Amino acid sequence: MADLGGLGDNEGPPVFYRWTAANPLPVLLPWLGVLLLLLLKANRTAQAWWIWAPLCGVAGLSGIVPSALASWPSDELGIFQKLVVAIAFGLAVAWLVLNHIRRRGRFVTFLGFVLVLLGSSSFIMLIGHLGNRDGLAWPAGEFAVATSLAIAAALTLVGLLCQRGYRPFVLCLWVLVLLLPVWLSIIMLWLMIDALRLGYAIDRHQIEVWCQDVGGLVRLSFAVVLPFLILSFANAFYRERLKGLLCLRPVAPPVPEERSGGVARG
Image (spheres, rainbow, N blue to C red):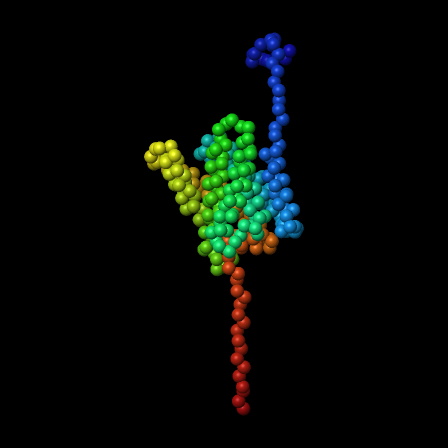
């Protein structure tokens, strides 16, 4: 018998506990999904494999979430850490299938991008909560939907503003600026839906709390999408896909100036 040091009796009936191994499927499935997408015919090029760079970078830096949202409860911070990784996988999936979802119409392209990003990230968030009885599966899905909509809407608006020119720095700046009004709109819509669903008036205190945290949501969303934008700026393979997503017009080649030949008079 081991000495418990005042924590309990040294003798007594044995207590048996069956340890069950953790299910590795929720961790491995997203990585395997990206690997399978890289085997598609449209992605069979060495440049496509650079998608691992932003994906692994965001997954490795997901630990910055507690500092970005310091005022949030610890259980919700855990959700956001998983959300960062889920959105990164959703963006990786969207970047790998952009050639299939982009269409001539801007709205149809936006809708396809939203469905891919939202479906992938929500699926990853929900499988991470399979078997958990903590009651956080529904909030996890809600946060995945809201973040997916915010990123997709910001990128679509950037495409409208930058359709006449492709300038990476300006594009990134507009994404950061537009994420703020997009997130504010989503938060107000979220509160209105909850008020209608639960039958109560929107509390002013709730609005103030959400508005105080909107800066953290903007920084979090921008930090996730920025590595994928940088990849698109530096990689010709993904640059064309980003232009297709934003529906940017091709830049017309400069027209050479006509030189008029004069006849010299003697």
